[in-house]
Structures are given as C-alpha cells and as structure tokens.
Image 1: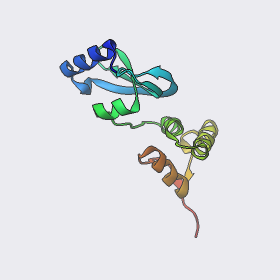
Image 2: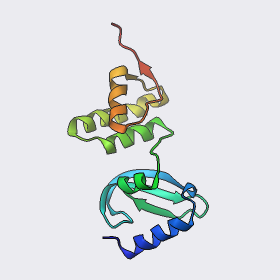
Image 3: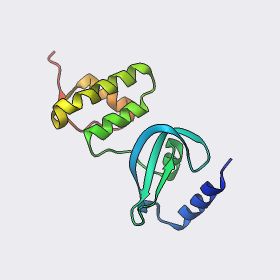
Length: 134
C-alpha cells in the first residue's frame, strides 16, 4: 500500500532529476518509508538544490539507483554496523567503531577484518590494512 504522501513524492521524482538527490545520512530507528513500508535502516536523502529531505528504506534506495558509499572511515563503520546481519557481525563492527576515537584515520584492520567488513557492506575498504606475517 502506497500512502498519498509517497504517491506525490514518486510523481514529483518523475519530474525531477534523481541526480539532484544525495544520501546524506543512514541511521537506525523506526520510521516509515515514502512507499509506506516500516523501515529500521533509515536512509535520508536530500535534494541538493532545495535542501528538502526525505526518508526512504534500503529497497527504495536501490530501486531509485542510489549507491551507498562513504567518504570517511567512521561513516563506513557506522553503516557496517547498520548492515550487520547477526550479533557476531554487530559486535565486530561496534568494536571497530570503539577503536576510532583513539586511532582516528590511522586505524588499520587486518586482511581478515577487511574482507569481513567488505562482505558485510558489499563495498571496498579503502583505508589502512595490516598484513599477517606467514
């Protein structure tokens, strides 16, 4: 079921260039997507010219062609926690986040941790890696 607010927004999107919208934040909460579905992983998109923001879920973000990418290590780790599929992955990503205040941009992960983070997010880890000595 699509609510009237969502119908209006989807009609507007047909008239506006989707490239004018960008993902500005991803967070956890309890909201409703513009399509009417309940969402826990909230993606906030913003119209770059007007500053108008909208809340959408992961499925609608994919449908609209938004790519999830992050500029900072902190964003990457926060969103890895949001995307974690089980308790073990959540604990791992939270542990990495807890290390950030101390290490900031110098934080490095092992090759194994890098692969795990990439598997969780489906995106490349582009920061420091330390290599195991074998």
